[in-house]
Length: 348
Image (cartoon, rainbow, N blue to C red; front, top):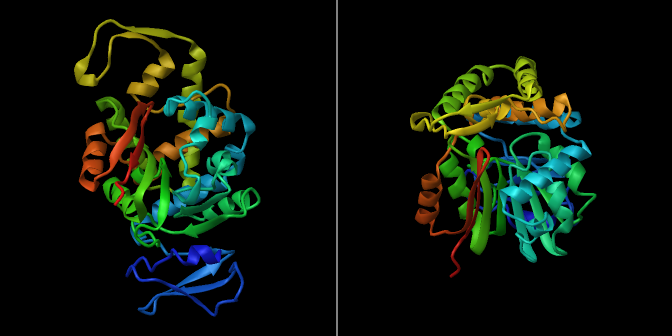
């Protein structure tokens, strides 16, 4: 943990500043503890301060810890290039280089729910020299994040913590980035407000959250998730293999289906559909991308169906939250199963 990060941290239970127990007197602390005013202590292991999450998110911690430890399922160069292409479309960009301009030229960028920093590895090397990047995650994936990012950027740090009880002082960071994570908490809205709390006036919150889909897809998703989220991660992974194989079979069928008329109560417009896309978009996540191997396709499906919390939202939800916090939305777009949003906190 860098000394500059210590200046930002608070006890998530009280909001009071924490202090380093037996400080080593160096610019970075690898092992030790942080102490609050009420006797609570938080360990520092492997250079990462660990703020113990609440019990009601134990399943989320376990699920994402398992997912990000399976590095063979998402580390391919081809998958990174696919993610870059998707981000260009999602944010309405001409090239991925425009995404790097989302971030400030100086100050602190906090990525909450960074996982193993797989996505962060795409943009962190392009941050301006005077930017301090901090990644926070609920799960043990934060250790992989440190191994991945620290060699790419010395001005980086890592915290294991909970978005709903963030161990950062109010108005302490310049940009909060939350890519596909707020909906994996017990309350997306509370997670959103927690991000706004730590954001300085004039700072930006950039986030992706799940979009509410049609009624059949919503019902099926809830049914599958309710079943699989009760299983240990390795067992759920195995149970999802037939669904991934179904996605592959549908993709390889190369069948076009014509929906002759709009079916408004199913939110299904008339038109021609590839069979796999019809099933994927309107019935269940039978995902398959032929440019990826089986394990990477499976990883994508596991991410959707195993976490206990995975709430879906409307544009009205997002606009209401931003309005209540005084945030000005500068960009909002529905892309596939998510909303992509950029919003700015008013300056003083």
